[in-house]
Structures are given as C-alpha cells and as structure tokens.
Length: 293
Ligand code: SF4
Image 1 (cartoon, protein in one colour):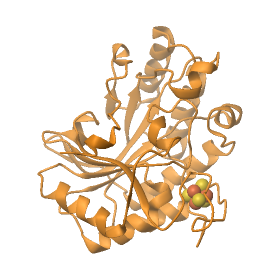
Image 2 (cartoon, protein in one colour; image 1 turned 180 degrees about the vertical axis):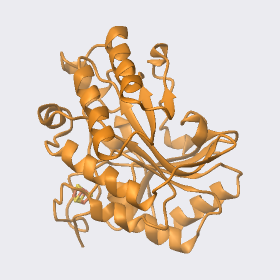
Image 3 (spheres, rainbow, N blue to C red; image 1 turned 180 degrees about the horizontal axis):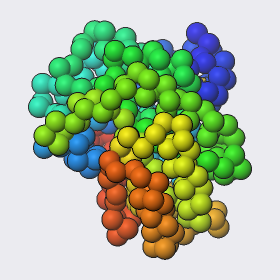
Image 4 (cartoon, rainbow, N blue to C red; image 1 turned 90 degrees about the vertical axis):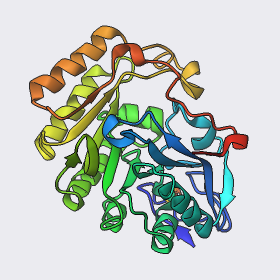
C-alpha cells in the first residue's frame, strides 16, 4: 500500500515503514475529537465546530503549535468505522459542521468513513495547503468548506521551516483547484454553508512574504474570497532554538500586512487583533480528554 497522497509523494509502503508524515500501519491516528469554539465566527458560529484532529502531518512546520500531534504523533489508533462513529456522534451533538483538522495524509480513509456515515452538517477540510490537485479533486461532493492555510511565498523559508521548497507553487495550484470545486462562498445569517477561507499566520520578519502571498491570491484567484489574518504566532517547538523564529511579530509588521490586504481590495474575512498572540488557541492534547464535546 504505497502512499503518494501528499505532494511529498514519498511512495512509502506504510504497512511496512513510516511515511514522511509519520503515519504507519492500517489505522488512522486521531489526537482529539472536540467541540471547537475558536475557529472563525462563520465556522464555530453558535454551537461550535465539530473538530477531529488527526495525528501526524505531511507538512510538519518547525514552529507548529500542535507539535505534540503533528511531530510527536500523539493520538489513538482508530479504524475507519471508529472515525465514522465519531462523525456521527458529533453530527448528533448539534455542532455547526464536521471539521477535519490536518487531514491530508488520511484522505482516502476519511472518504471511506464519509461513505459509511454522511453528516447532515457541512464538512470542513482544514488543511496546511500542502495538497496535490488530485487530492483536492477527490474531495468534490464530500467537502463543503475549505479552511486553507497559505503559509509562504519564499522557497528558502518554506524549505527552512517546513522542508517544502515547492510549497508556494503547490499551494497556489491546490487553492485554485479548491475554488473550482467550491466556486462560490455561501454564508447565511453569519454561518458558512459552503466556501473557502484562506488563513495566513504572519511570521516574524516575514511581512514582505505575507504581502506577496496576498498579491498572488488576488492575481490567480481574485479578491472575492474570505481571508483570515492571524497574529497568534508564538514560538513553539523547534522555533525556540531558531533566532529568526524565537521572537514575536512586531505590531508594525502586522500592520503592514493588514494595510496591504486593504489596499489589494480583500473585503471578506477576519482579522485577529494584534493582542491575540498567545497560547489560548491551542487545544489540550491530553489523551484523557480525547473526546470533549
Ligand atoms: S501522506 Fe505521508 S506517506 Fe503519503 S506521500 Fe505524504 S508524507 Fe508520504
């Protein structure tokens, strides 16, 4: 069972070895199932988003706030049927949507679970943006909403921080494909039914890179798209050992990115207050609290 699901295409037989993303074996690994109240307001809305956090990750950024699950692989082994049961339980718990967090490396199994149980609420694909076009295409008619990270423009920085020199080109193509399969945003009474939210976390001394990302989105996809600008960067994991990352984003850096978004004409979206930079958005991945709805 050789895996080529993500742009790494490492061709690993995960029944025998461990892929770059950290997955191995027959099962899915899940770190947490929870009602998530801190996603964007159109996603968490009134009752919260039904989030399923998958363990391991195909991007594995060195500053990841969820490094316990993305790098260290903390989580529980679950079958496709277990996953379908979690989706059902969330769906019956009055959540606003089912939110697959860092799902790329388990795409095929997630689609199998959605065939076993199709939720009534919208399905959210909450991705690092490091996706192949083929993988996004597979999601057509299963996924309603993309929470789509767009992290870097610079090849040098994407290599240094995520070991993915091709991140920008790959992410831009994947975003265009996502727009193809979900062509219009649909928000009713403040709640998203269908659509794309492009998320961008501003990193220290990277404001020029951030601006290039928004210029590229405008050029290739247009400005009629939700964006979510995040100021919550805190040095986690390996970032604490790196001079360029072991610092906060300065208010002026954040303001420059914010100004450029306005000048470029993006009008739909969410801007985190500069003061939001803290650990409060990081869920507790203690396995004793595996299920918190
Ligand atoms: S999903 Fe994991 S195993 Fe599959 S190609 Fe990507 S890194 Fe390799």
